[in-house]
Length: 89
Image (cartoon, rainbow, N blue to C red; front, side, top):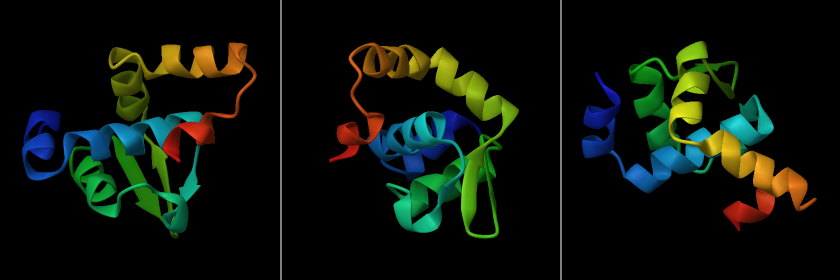
């Protein structure tokens, strides 16, 4: 399954939110994941690994975040000295 197929079956903004959450915060417990269905779709395509109740980005997941320029968003948050979690509220 490709990321395009995952987006068709799952809300695209939910996929981006999960990628952003995992990129900003690292391994994240299931209770703090923005969308479990998006997490599952990302697991199927190999961008996220889920184990013991935690999800985290794979190497391909980190590369996808960089391609989506999520790394630049994190830099902006850090320069503004605002915690990235405020973006999810």
